[in-house]
Image (tube, rainbow, N blue to C red; front, side, top):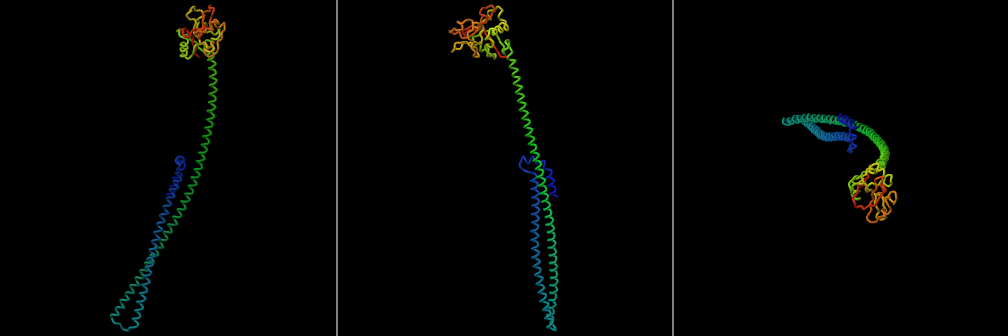
Length: 357
């Protein structure tokens, strides 16, 4: 019954304990089988003890029977001797002395007593033989029953082992299937993420292109810049620092043409017809290269002499500390309308900033 209970516990724990066996490296089902084997081992040990005890008892009984048998033979020999002596005496003597007669009577009593003792010993021998046989039969029955139990338990262990192997194989297959599905799901998800990243990147590039296109068309000159007229006078370098602090620089984009200059200063700032000469001559992002002695914009683009864009060749070629450019003649009626002139960089003047929009 105890092996059946262990088998039920094993069957109930196979599925529940599988994940634990994977994690810890032990198998509860195998542990239960080992418990059953320990139970069987204990029963065999108990049977071995009983067998050894019975063997010892049997040997003791056999020794006792031997002693009693020897005693019976000795008594029988004594009885025979006494009987022979009695017969001899009775035959050889017609009339006996009363004392001798009493001795014969006593010998007859001894023979009777020895005969009764002999019969009693023989009965003890029979009883011991019967007990020995009964003990042997009982032990043999116990051995037969235990062998039957061991055989049945061995079969249960084999069945349990087969069940565990079947369940383990099934669970391992399930784990394999789940692993394959997990990998498939991961690959599919990874492909989805890659596709999404590609879509996001494409959308970003498209949006960035749209933003860049919008940026290129913003501002008063539709060139991606807003402009600010600084009405505080600074040196050229100080004015540039102020513009940079606003996120931009001294203005030069769009100011390489007379039309661009007019759109900004006349159209946007409305400075060309207000009659205020104090608005004139602002610094822009134009300076002389100290090596070539030619003027260039802040992006390095040259601004060679042009009689429309520059006030005069002599001014352009000035070599005494006039290395910064400004716009002069802002009023429409000025003969030098919006032409560039060289100027000392350390003199304070108004200026124009450009800031990306």
